[in-house]
Image (cartoon, rainbow, N blue to C red; front, side, top):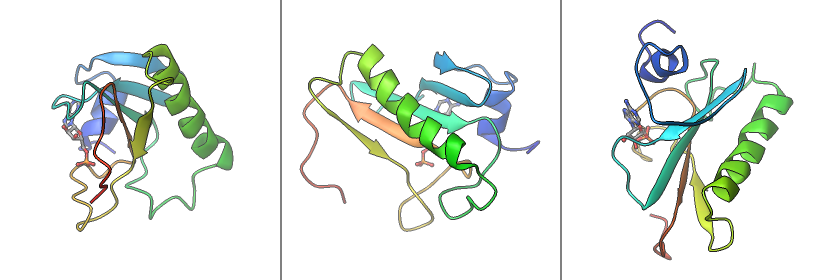
Length: 114
Ligand code: AMP
């Protein structure tokens, strides 16, 4: 989508602190990190969010989860643990309407998820 922030990042039109890229998936550091390690994992194709995945392939969705785990491992936080979150819609405070997973870790996280 031409005016989507994460589409522009995926196309290289806006810079990012990239940690992984392949043909379908990009992972980059969140510009406002909320934990010591805060990486966003996105599909390069545009899907607004978890509610709009009808046209997303199972392979892509599985790839996003596998890549998140691989990024956690390469960041050295797989042993201590991490959280993978995708905010969906208003109540979840989704601010960028392009599917993304937050990989959060590198420190003790709260036992509350709300
Ligand atoms: P959400 O609120 O779940 O939609 O998450 C969107 C995330 O994108 C937030 O954590 C923002 O800090 C992050 N973000 C916004 N703009 C950028 C950017 N240019 N580069 C990296 N992360 C960004």
